[in-house]
Length: 389
Image 1: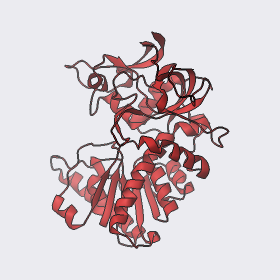
Image 2: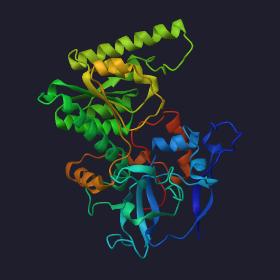
Image 3: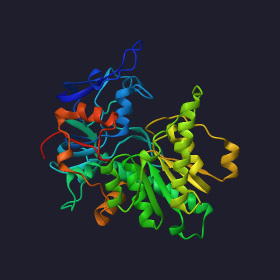
Image 4: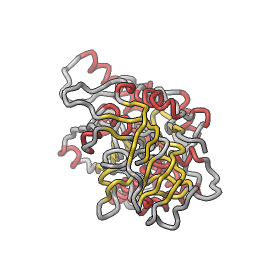
């Protein structure tokens, strides 16, 4: 057995309420796991990326991942950069002691190479990156380019870009299936969400679309502008979010919502020349879904690679059919595409900007988790450091 220090997540008792505080569910303590098998590699995490699925795990929403895995406790954290300590006997010769690699989060793949279960989240037996030592299947290690022009914290944020690559590719091809001979500069791609949406809008801009995205802080609005994305101040429509799922009718709240929706649709009309959004990157979910669909053009595509504020959605199928709206849902990316996306990032600079002073330490992981939940982060790419480089 290997014993190390980790932030450990425990299963919630069946009769207990969902915890609300990070310190109630995440404990810093010793954690033991079996020695790596022939196909696994012992590694030390260097930098981890804090992702939405980690917040889902801590809040037990939509599932208790420990119970889903059939385990009393686990270590989460499925995306980041690690250093190889000891390759297994059957590890590929491309993985050597001292190599620095990105962890591809594939726990179980389908026959086409897409993820069914995710390492460090819902895949039983996997040990995530919020620990001083862990083990990873050798095939899931993708080396960071030698002599890269970019820092390890930048590479640690790769997953939002890999996910964006896959989601954008599917969404764009779906849009082109109906809009075959169009000038892309006439069409608007709009997004709300986080780092995945930013990365997708960068790809859309490179393809030739007009692009815009909402943000609610001055820092993020400036960041979008610097990336060539038209920033839209989310504070212009403060009451836009609503679930639309059986809420009790409140005439005051309804009036405020309608005012925010009207302002949002006015902004979209101005940005799109009255046509609406051609491709809407919506990684928020139910609270803003009504506005997403209302702003979508005919033959438009709404694309999502996850959700933050609401998992269950309702729509009118007849309306969506008449407007020829296409709905794209993707998860992670295809395993076989991993090296290709990495090489594109290195060659083109399509990569996250990371402020070294904003990286959280291993001791500060609960603070990071709380800041993420309370939306106190100025960055779209929150990073934590586990071991010295």
